[in-house]
Length: 364
Image (cartoon, rainbow, N blue to C red; front, side):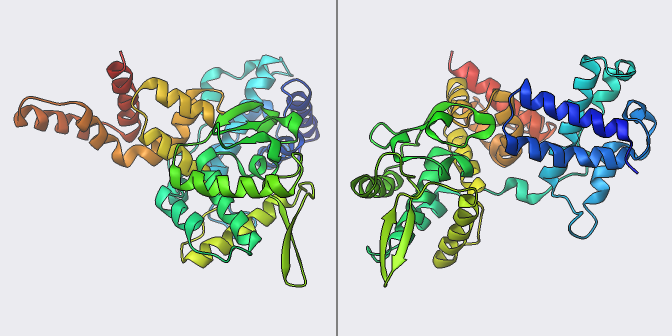
């Protein structure tokens, strides 16, 4: 049984997120799905008594990963559930709800993902080489659907846009010549939490060429308000572009079409979001200064560079040691061996932060 007061308090928190922090309906639905686990964990116990509940919440969430579907939770989802619970308790304490002020910050800080949470899928991303292969393999010029999907793969990598934002981009929001896109909700772009930003495309000629060719085509056939990832109508064996407005299922169609694209090239399927990871990894790998690192973070529409670091430090950790050693030129082998030994004592997170610090120093 779920405690009714807990349920009502969670609903109050969701109203606050919607009315005060102005989260979009889709985000609120996602937060509700995460907070349901908190309610199920507490059962009939009031949430202000959470420190006494066993097993502790992160351990409980980890235990769900060993169950069969639909209860099984991916590692990334587990992390988001625990982070959302922490956000809830901070809100309840800050607003002085029934005895929640007695919860200590030390206890709230214990709400962090269990150390055992790990998934190799967190390190998966679409590489530049894979994107070029997807975007440039020969196709029939009359097959507009495949040409569109190739342009989509190129644009997803170049822009780093989320799938929902990309699928809802109108033609007028894209400026290939200036290499930027206007991710503006007032243009109908479905950004996360309705954020508004002008973001920029990576300067990769072979991908920009594919994007520009598709851009020229849709502009010659459709009005500026039509979706850049246009619908393709197939009648009597002939394909034509239509200006149908994006629908809620557009993301599902994008997923289906990307699966087909990966299959045609013989590559293992990776979701649209993995192109965003590829964009970030490519940008961070080529960052030379802290200003470059910050630019990549802003282009991903992250609120803070710490968000970028927390997401992509694990992905980049394998090359951190090599990059640090290449940045620091030492006069003799003996000193290099000492430095290498020192690096061996550092965690991946420490190495990642050291790389950022060194890049910042070199920019001075």
